[in-house]
Image 1 (cartoon, one colour):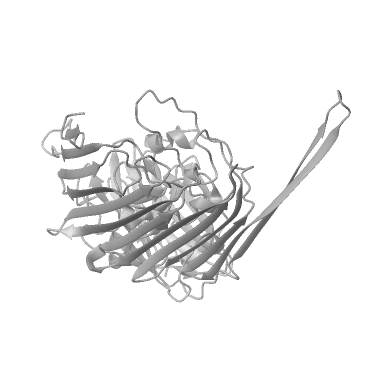
Image 2 (cartoon, helix red, strand yellow):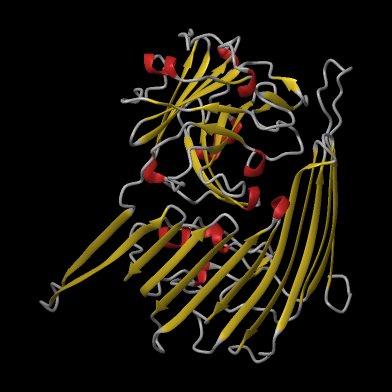
Length: 518
């Protein structure tokens, strides 16, 4: 391929151009030595990479070329994947880059890269960068239904603002992500957001009714040959010590402690985790929240052991969860409860995936054993059926268990260019720690339709009185919830000063299980 000027848009091959309906494709190129990651994109090695781009608008227009060109290229060597993104801008003063921290990064221009490394069209990694080199990563599961922002892996990105626009250079070590070593093709998608005019551009299946986090709608990148993750063994031992000297009594005391965290990739699709005497020293503190409602609060998980492959244990219930990892190793007031031993194995196969976890925790009354199991069968057309079970109560010596089943379906090509998703779940639980320890059943269903201008949502869920999964979370009990929502976003192409208008309607009706409004 002839060298192109990297400060001007390239000629994009037809198969690598953004598509309204379809999955574009391009090839990654192997290099002996990767580019320097400095946000300039002026390293000559980028000339060897195949360009992809010509992203299409999904907002405010639909099925229209982006007002500003965008292209990207991918290189790789033995250890890393390199992604270069050219965000061209006629007037670089129109680039919005004001945020100084991640909390405000969503108000700036940014680019989002989705990587489906197993090409299972369900799970993916996401990497986000802004012109000021702010970066974020997240895990995506269940075709975008589950998004874990607390996941944090090792990667780097440098961005820079130039006369022609802004550039992003990303490097991702292969050791930081899981992938199928026997496959040379991954799923990939790119989104660019221009805050100045509110424009959103996508590369693959660029339609307003499609979420780019839905890996089933991603394009493909080929040519990723002979990738290796090495032994796949990460060992993190720790030792802590405290020394106390009481000048009043003359007593002194030294206490030492230690433990081990281990992660081993048995094969590219199966990973085992082990934690002995789990260390909480480096866990970020919770953000203080004031709860003036009568409903229970939910806090995000921040411990590495529980964050790893957390999506494997996700259950799509509404307002509750049979598995809430924050109950393990933490008291109701947030105080640490020692975890003596924790083991977990997860596997993501073509036709099914599963996760098993067993934890041994301490308590004043003695050790307690906690178990969680999850299995899902991948059916045709993006649907799944699953089962989740838990056993044990981390805050009681009594027995408790939950068993639930769920069905999920997403059709990203419904009626051609629309999207239809539905989910249904049933969950039963029994908790001997409660006076009322008989089995309680909760259930619900939801359907979402997304079109170019119209979104419709219908949902129903029911939670009985005293419903309290021993290892789960419940916002409230004893209710029936009816939800009807719609959003109409017409484009006004004939009005110069108005791109779109947004009309939202959202009705939620709550009754108790006796049908009295609550």
